[in-house]
Amino acid sequence: MSYFVLILVVMLMMGLASQNVQMTFKRFSQVPIRKRISGAQAARYILDSNGLHHVAVERVHGNLTDHYDPRSKVLRLSEPVYDSYSISAVGVAAHEAGHAIQDKDGYGPLKLRQGLIPLANFGSQIGLYVMVFGMMIAPLFGWIGFILYSLGVLAAVITLPVEFNASSRALAQLTNYGIISTEEYTGTKKVLNAAALTYVAAALGAIMTLIYWLMVLYNNRE
Image 1 (cartoon, helix red, strand yellow):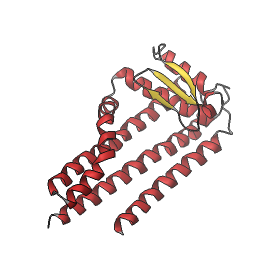
Image 2: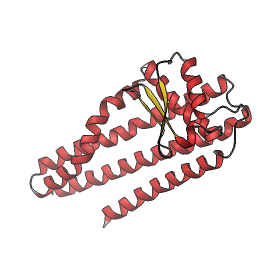
Image 3: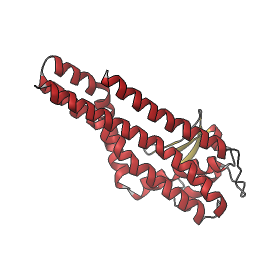
Image 4: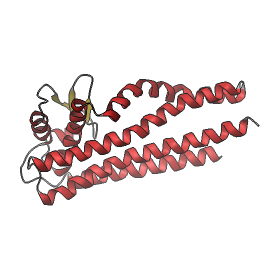
């Protein structure tokens, strides 16, 4: 029962964070910036200004599916961002450009996350099953499963400085190049902060779940 309560709390946190970012994005997607620069144009300008002419800017289907792919050096913007002149669109586009700049600068947490993701995905997928198996059959496997599962939690935690740093870079780029005005800065920051809270909620949820399983394994040994 305690596990289901924990899952409910985690789902509630992530649901509220997701709803908040969607509401904030929708609100400021109706506010155009004075420069009349689209998300794609803002991303292209920031990339070119930082010597990243080789990084392509592409359109991708979906809503809030924006991301930077460090392997193929492609920045993909969702349809509501690519052509829009809104505060939300420009803020999100600049954030993804911030990831490209991180990649260029060799930003430590980004490199660490890139290297950890394959292991984290593997650990998240089978770690829980190995833990349950270990508790029923062999305690050693329970702790092995815990270590595997913790890789996914570690990735979620490392994601936080990566995302917050990308947002800081985005705001600096947008203001330094005069893409947004002083009045538009506040709205842009709200959009980026709302998006960052989804990663905070995910990390907290992962940590809470990991602590729960640590307690279960500890009690199971007795």
